[in-house]
Length: 101
Image 1 (cartoon, rainbow, N blue to C red):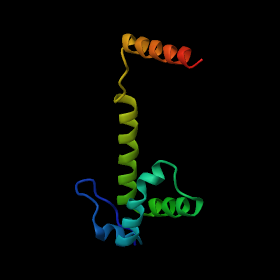
Image 2: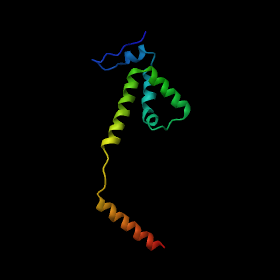
Image 3: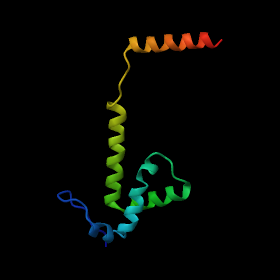
Image 4: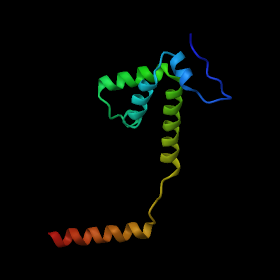
């Protein structure tokens, strides 16, 4: 029997167990979620985490949220240095390069 998540309430441990997922499996998957999203897992762990996410609604939701959050941060949280600062940095680096010769 598969639990059907209801949008009007958060997923619970009962949902995970009904889906064939254990709380310890979720703990392991979530502990490695950042490494998974960063592409830092070896092939075996990558396969394990993908299998867990395919079977576990709550963990899939968490992974999706983290992926979306990362995309928003990459897109919207970018500062650009003013051109005047970049010009000063380049001048200092050019001077240092000339002095090193």
